[in-house]
Image (cartoon, rainbow, N blue to C red; front, top):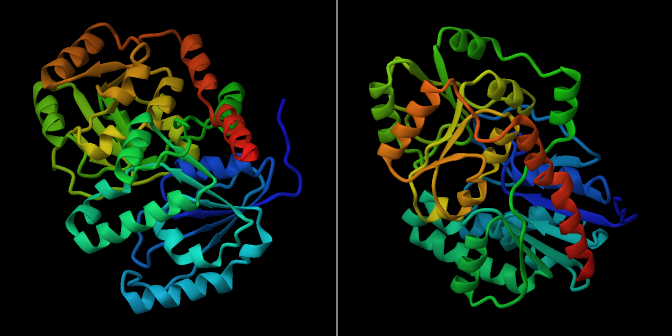
Amino acid sequence: MKSTVRGKKILYLMHVPWGWIKQRPHFIAEQLSERYHVEVFFTQSFRKIQLVRNEIAGNVEVRRLLLLPYGRMKIISAINSFLVALQLRIKDYDYVWFTSPLLFKLLNKYIPATTKVIYDCMDDATEFQFAKTHPRFLTQLQTYEGRLLERSDTVFTSSEYLKKKLSASYQFSSNVTVINNAISLNNTERNTLLGESESLPFEIEERFKNARFRITYIGTISDWMDFELIIESVEKFQEITYFFIGPAEVKIPMHERIFHFGPIEHKYVSSVLQSSDVLVMPFKLNELVLSVNPVKLYEYIYANKPTISVKYNETLQFEDYVYLYKNKEEYFSILQRIIDNDFPCKKSDEENKRFAKMNSWEERIETIINKIESR
């Protein structure tokens, strides 16, 4: 039975645009809005492209936080802090929810002592390429993450690895709760039951028609993608075609059987997965990836398609449902077996659906609410 926290307000600050590929911050905000009054403010670069029009589920209110560009400059940062204070009525909220320490930098001096602060650490921000190549920015990021941890009444991380890294990096001994990623079943399950899945976008459908075996990746495409593995496999298996769907932060290799379509609205994700033959997560392992509990694997499993993923600690929990590989030889072997055996899943459709329901945002939110209300 759902518990309702009537009358309480959450200021929910997102470091990614609402129109970015839909992920953890979006889903948690939507779920919280079923019990709280939630106002989302998101930041968005003036140069941000590859956005989509994401639908808003629940009762969440969504607004863009207006900031000046070049916010890393000291004078601009000070002006932005003032602009934030003008746009937000901090004293009106019971909770302030942060998804990034950089947002805390702008707001920390305006948060009343009586307002509870929640930090949801979804990624290791210090391991992104920009932070690693800009020492001053990295130092600033680490400083404010440490301060945010000290100020927070409740801290969540998306993975056990990330929890341990926070504790080691900041000697942070307070209680941290791991809330793994999940799948949102509100609309996905309803549409599946009613047979109302959205049709494929036209250009994707046309390419899918002409491909013999369709291997699909949905998500952000960045320097963690193992394109060397992709190129070798597409040369080795003449019958396969790769489809990468999501915002690209790196150049994707040119090949007649490798296609990229950019981001799509979340409502189309289910249709794309259902139209694929194999789903993949071909990542190179680095410190950033090791801290990721991959949300896409929950969605892949629910789609009831054979799924291949690189093997590391955070993917071991999926081992009964997903084919895991450690090197390219294992990847090729798994792919060959899947093709030879007519694309079998490791589990039945019923078992896959049961796993997804146990790992839905609808389930995760109960733990989140119990935790923040107990502080």
